[in-house]
Amino acid sequence: MRRSGPFLIAMLVWFALACAAGASGRVAALAPPLPQVVIAASTLVLVLAGALLPGLRDWLAHVNLRGFVAFHVTRFVGIAFLLMSARGELNREWALPAGWGDIVAATGALLIAVFLRDPESQPGLLRVWNLVGFVDILMVVGTAARTGMRDPASMAPLFRFPMSLVPTFLVPLIIASHVLVYARRWSTRIPAPSAVRP
Image 1 (cartoon, one colour):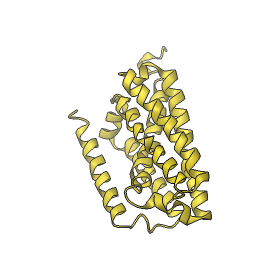
Image 2 (cartoon, one colour):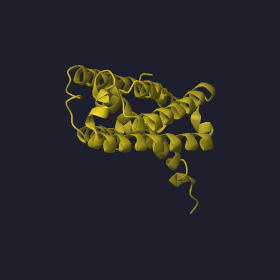
Image 3 (cartoon, rainbow, N blue to C red):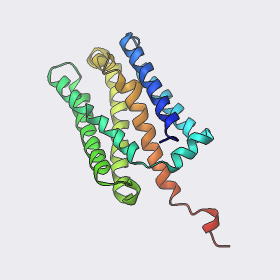
Image 4 (cartoon, one colour):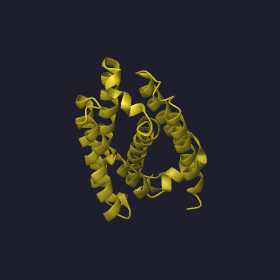
């Protein structure tokens, strides 16, 4: 928990800044494809920080992935997408696949977090969930960009607070955590130098 402290504090600061930006109306003022640019830039910063900062890189290499998987329970926000679509507030073409896809990913994350103390103990299950969740979030972002470019008003509610936390906070962390899980699974398939026989 002591080693996780700096990471958790950084996430709380980011969350506070995302709340401030959303509540101020600045996120709602972004015209497509600027929201997708923000998501891509935020995700890139997270991935690069995890790869280049020694302390963070070491922490990410050893932390139990259970917490990272559990974070994806936030993807039950897909229920809100479906409800907003039913009320005509969000584009149905985007909201239905995005909503149901996120619900599936969130359900898988909940089951893994509840029943596995260490998700890496079931690498096959973790790999399948990670692939499904990663493909889903990439499709969600891509479809949102196309829909927003074609009809900005149909996606506007997604950028008003508190839903603005989805593109400014949740999505970058979700994508980056999928990359982390993939990197961890890949590293376990490469033998350490001491384990390689001459």
